[in-house]
Length: 40
Image 1 (tube, helix red, strand yellow):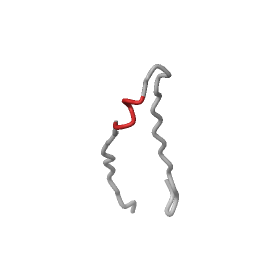
Image 2 (cartoon, one colour; image 1 turned 60 degrees about the vertical axis):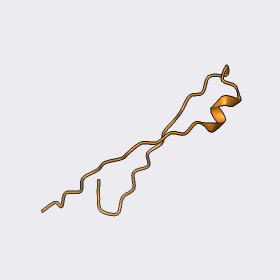
Image 3 (cartoon, rainbow, N blue to C red; image 1 turned 90 degrees about the vertical axis):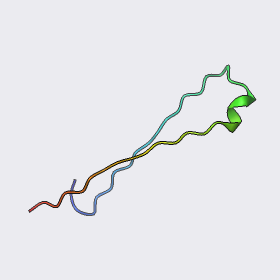
Image 4 (spheres, rainbow, N blue to C red; image 1 turned 30 degrees about the vertical axis):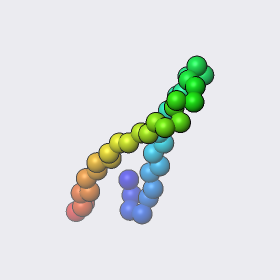
């Protein structure tokens, strides 16, 4: 990537049509870990 560029990440969750109202209280969490390295 070049300086000042952007990278968009999208997360998609497929929910089956058979799921009822019980899914309303669900939550999802994840960690994103990245490292920066200066180029010479």
